[in-house]
Length: 287
Image (cartoon, rainbow, N blue to C red; front, side, top):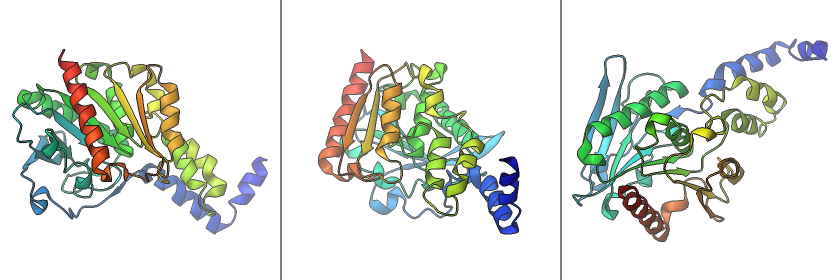
């Protein structure tokens, strides 16, 4: 069996493919863009540009979108793996009108944020965003909601599992999360004939240290809402199902059978439903 394995990579093209596959495993989850296509000002939204500065870490670019309601809770939004926060503005532009502040930022390597994208780095960036918001108590005294989409949803769950953050968030909302980095990477490798034979290798070379399925025991703080689209081909529904099954506190679980990836809240009715959930969660946490 070992002989057959080495024979398979005796061909230089096969060996090159293997090396590329192994070297790119860590970047499978990141498709950053430095060009910010849309800003809040371009769509008529008031906002405060913010730089998160730390001498030991890359400077991060952030936007604060204020609601016109003085007692508004704040939504900390974690975007997905592609583009930058300008690409994902469409996911949250409507929240200030519904009575919620929004704080969104770019992970290192995205948009105007310095540094290079990495999983460990992105998690440190999220903690910096949380620390910043906690330092501005006027933004969080009426509630802090952690809302992530896709990769951002997955990182929201692993962040919320940290014991020191159990009493920080009013609720965790994870739209199209996945339970395991190695499993979804292998699943994507299986879709292409060139990488299909190496899906096992992809799975072995991706760390699950930050995967929600390794953090389940820590998710015992605020209420969790999981959201999935039945036609999502990027993060298929079964990934969210796995997280739901693993959680023993029975989180809320909304499934929209006709929705594709990040297309759920294009509907005004669905946006209203999410806003009502946010309102209920922040009021409950104030008690």
